[in-house]
Amino acid sequence: MNAPAFFTAANFRAEREGDWARLEALLDRVERKSPRRLSEDELIELPRLYRATLSALSIARDTSLDAGLILYLESLSTRAYFLLYSGRQPWRRQVVDFFRSGWPRSVRALLPETLLAAALFFASAIGGYALVVSEPQWFGAIVPDALAGGRDMQASAAFLRDSLYGAPSRGGLEIFATQLFTNNAQVSILAFALGFAFGVPTMLLLAMNGAMLGAFYAVYVPHGLGWGLTGWLSIHGTTEIFAIILSGAAGFHIGRAVAFPGVRSRMAAAAQAGRRAALVMIGVVLMLLVAGLLEGFARQLVMQDAGRFAIAGTMLLLWIAYFALAGRTGGPGRG
Image: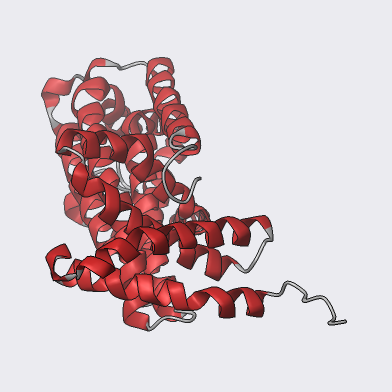
């Protein structure tokens, strides 16, 4: 009588990786060229391979196999899903599906990178604050003169207070706000685009932006205006900083795939990670647009700290609830 076979990760992979490799090869060919390049037999084979991959993904999750394999199967099944189904949907349905499930699922898949990006950003803000408080000369090295606009360590309390609560028609803070938004948009795009360099430039950009935030707090806090600065920044900053952190997470996601490709080549790993990160970045652009509207209108109309914090808190809760709950059922690789 033969001894019973035991389930192992090695056996699981050996029995199924032929199907995965075959599916990946067909997807690569379609994405490089066109579905018309597939034969009739290959077109029939695609749905079978997709279902087999979904089944393997379900087993891998239920048995808690290694995270790298689960991530690979999620990516593979998502690519196959969009190839098989998204082309049959009108563009309006694809837009709805992006907001309903595609974007929030992609953000949830980047949770470890998001936590890392957030920790780095806020740790850098604390470091920048401490550095400027101890040595005020550092402010000029951290914050460009054009962005500071006179809001430096020599500024008076009256000038700083007016910058937070003065009438919008005076224009000083509006120029500063536009410069800050432009800077943050550039940082977001670069943090994502440079992620392929093992995430190092992404790390530096997040640290630089966080230190800049801390440096401004070092200017306002000694004058008793830290709370007011927080209210002024947060009315659009809960959206804008969230977008920066997500763009950093997207860059880290690509960098991790390049540094640790697993069973795939670095190019294939980076390509798969890039597709997921690109979905996140489409949403980041939309978040930056929302932040721009909040900055241009809500911040101008709401001059009281309580109102600013109410808007900021509402936006933050909406983003967290959306990313945590949307797209939890249906489709490939359920969240």
